[in-house]
Length: 154
Image (tube, rainbow, N blue to C red; front, side, top):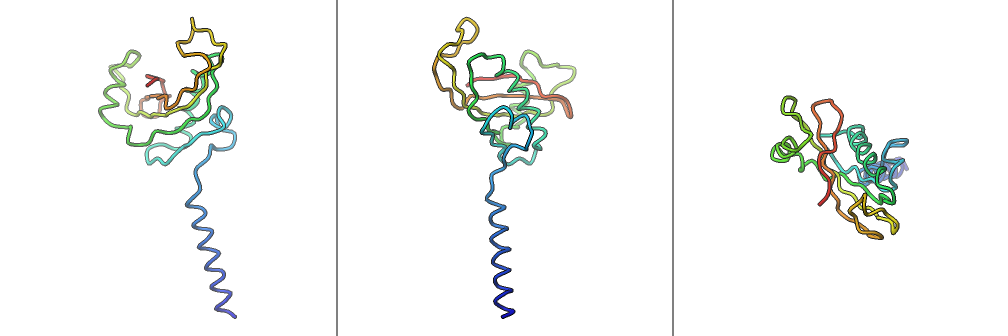
């Protein structure tokens, strides 16, 4: 009887551990990401915390909020592999970068969004009533600083 109970408990513990590992990380409750989009994929990162990502997501959301008629469908972290020295040098070479205080970190997100039929094409260059997929968002910051949106598009 004791062996049966022990085996049952061991099986339950194994199931619980497996279930934890298969779970996709969702946007933290009350986070910028949760408020702005129904689907945010934080992925796995050795470089950035959910708070770091939320700060970058807030900068992206600020830009999208300026685009009247655009609805964000999903946003996903592109992965740690985007944070290369080559990409960092590229972001430091763009307008808006400060050569005296160069960026030390970068993050990339990819989004899907829908552009409504009634957009003002004199303001936005998107095609009306169109879905855009895999739209890139590149942000950079100095260590501990605020994320700056440096490049977006394809």
